[in-house]
Length: 171
Ligand SMILES: [Zn+2]
Image 1 (tube, protein in one colour):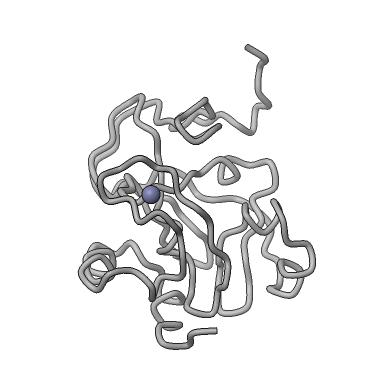
Image 2 (cartoon, protein in one colour):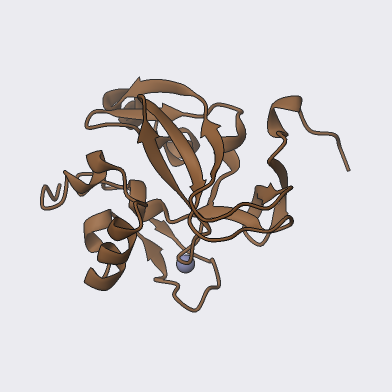
């Protein structure tokens, strides 16, 4: 197995093969709400995301009303989606953090529900192959989620405020 760049390792996570390709796997245990890592990267304007599109856009995280975080080659690049996620993103002090949404043990894949970071003005969608019982088949804007799922995610702090604010903006 080829060795991976240093930036793809941390004390908390490693990049490894998962059901949906390379993903982030926990190397220790986390309790619910523990911070896992800070999501590093470069903040880019929305128009750059639209201009570049493709894999670049696929890898970016919504960062604010008009901005996205480009993880580059950092760990965030390998953060996969699940319709039954083990983690979520929160924003504090103008930075994005990945935190445990439930207890995670070493060897578990760390995933988020991408819909929790897709505003109602985000038109990006992707087919889902997560294989979970809850799988919705397609990943879409937060507002498209079933009401009970939306409420559950909001109550558990799994949806950044700038995403909640877009509810009803519908592009
Ligand atoms: Zn799914």
